[in-house]
Each structure stands twice: as structure tokens, then as C-alpha cells.
Image: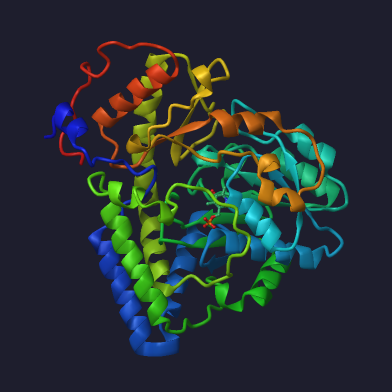
Length: 441
Ligand SMILES: *Cc1c(COP(=O)(O)O)cnc(C)c1O
């Protein structure tokens, strides 16, 4: 048992903002796959990729699945596959507040961007903005389920159909979430899941693309024949250098989810941990077999991982209500969020003195500090569109709290104290009232 005093006097205790625990068993399995791939040459790896394909097919119900070295790579290929079906369309509609990787994927695919705003309470798309911009230049609308809060997609789907555009259901942050309209990632023409660190499950990096549209699947397979993990799966070649690097990154991820060690990478600015960068110059790579092993194991544990996050989010939600002066994202009726992170916003619209109460040591960080209309390196690729004031407000004020397994009761109390003073309120004695949960470290 750590006492409160110990926990907070521990000079190096630092909660990572996100992360899924990789177990020693995961790493052993990944090593086993890597070893088999090196020894058996070109034929090895095929089996584990197929196994992941089966798991993804079962999870999503989609007929075609593809695996990539990153989510943005998968998204770029999916957009090119769409473009091959509609060569005259070159515009993608994006939420003005989302991961910069989404914008990077569109630019990588050689397309242009128009933005739509979000609803401040639910983070759902402003369908008026979408409808107003759906003309015959629009190839695709991307919808994102930010922080694991699923948004409804049926209306967007109808709008897209009517305009001859496609819908890309970006569940990079919402694997396992559902809205009334279905499972996140499966309600569009194409679905995306990310396997990056900090996502619902991880294989260090990686991305999955799913679709039920035969024509899109054919185009994706011709752009990236090595990416298919359902149907005919190509054998994986050996890439020892890459595999060793990935295994080392696994060990680092495993070590650094530990709050007693995370201060180390967090204090090395060149690692760029926790920063979101717009970088459209990425490579399109395959998911390595050892990553497929990690991903399959993650998929099989997804329900319990999501339940764990749900429990932390539930406790955070209760405490946040207690602090007062704060808003959380409204869960839509019939929806099942997976709470990748727990966003909070000031009830009045602004934090006192406009100072977002970030406490990196507690994993309390902002996510995307600029909305896409203000992201200067993106400007050359942006087409004129509506002003997106809510996205701008979210970028300026939204604060996220961690929901991973290393968050303890005393961490939550410390977070609430930071929020209480950040929201301009005093909550004397808040820390002392905390019950202790032992052994959670
Ligand atoms: C992380 C993320 C992506 C892309 O994933 P990477 O695997 O990091 O390339 C796409 N969309 C959203 C909303 C994301 O959060």
C-alpha cells in the first residue's frame, strides 16, 4: 500500500496520458512470431496475419480487412482507393477538431480538405455544415469518434449517399464502441482502427482498414497487395532490423506505462511524447507479423480493456460532478463509449484566466491545441469553408484525463484538486477524504 503522502512525494511519479498495458506474455508471443519469421523466411508470418484477419472479421462483421504499419497509412490508401472509383472528386470533409494524422492522411493521398464543425456537447458532426458542403467535388466525409465517444452516423450516411460521396468511419480512438447506428468503424463505406500506442489496443504502431464494398476492397488490394489479412493473405518477408526495433519499442512501452518510470521519456523533449504533429510525409508500410500477434491478443482482450477504462471514466465522472463548474462530453442515447480518455471542459466556456489546468505529471493534457483551420502547415491544402467556432473552442479549452489501468484513486483525487483550482473553486479537504485503493500500482 502506498500512502497518499508517499504517492505524491514520490518525485518521479508521472502518469502517462494514455496507454494499454502490454504483458510479458504479449512480448514473448511477439518474440516468438519474430523468431519464426526470421527462421522460416517468406512463408512465415502469413499465419499470424490471417489469424488477425479472422479476429478483425469476427469483431467487425466486415468481409474485407487490411493491415498497415499505421492508421494514417491505411487511411491514405483507403482514400486513394475511393479516388480510383470517383476520379473527378478530390475533396475530403474533415471535422475541424481531430487528430492531425487525419489531415496528414488526406494530404498524403493528394486530396484537398474542407472542414465541418462539431457539436460542443457531444463532439458529433454539425450535419448542417456537412450538408452545406457536400457537392460533386466531395469524395468522402470522415467522421471521428473522439476519445472513444461514439457519434451517430446514419444521417451522414444518407447525406453522403444522396451526394455520391463516401463515408469513412474513423474509429481510431473507438475500437469496440457503439452508437445507435452500429459499431464504430463499421457504419461507413470504409472503417479505420489504429493500433498506435495510446489507442484502445496497441501493436506499437499499426492500422486496420475494413470494408464490405467489393470494389473498394479490390482497389485497396491493388494499391497495397501485401496489406490484405482476409481472403488471400500474402506471405510476410523477414525484416530483422524493423522487428528488433519494434520489440525494443514494446519493451519501452511496457516499462514506461509504469508511473514510476514514465518521467524518463516524458522529460526527453526529442521523443515528442504527447505532442500531436502534422506530418504528411510518412511512409506506407506493412504491419509486421509480430505486430499482428500483439494486435490479435489485444482484440481478444478488448472487452476487458474497455471495461477497465469504463470503470475509471465512471469514477472520474462522479468526481467531476462533485467538483462542479465542469462539463463532460454527453453520451448519446443508446451509445456505448469506450472512454479512451476522459475529456472535461469548463462549464462557463472558459477556464479562469484562460489557463487550461494541465498537469502532465497526472496525465492531464490537452489533445489538439489547434483546430485544423488554424493549423498553419495545413493551410495550403484547405479549401474555404464555414468558420468552425466550436472546434476552435475545443482546441483552446478541452482537457483530457487518463483512463488507463495505472490511474489510482489518489491520482483521481489529485486530478480533482487541480480541476477545482483550475475551475476557480476551492475544495478544502478534498484530498483527505479519499479512500485508498492498494496495490493498483
Ligand atoms: C490516431 C488517429 C488516427 C491515425 O492513427 P495513426 O495510427 O496514429 O496513424 C486517425 N484518426 C484519429 C481520430 C486518430 O486519433
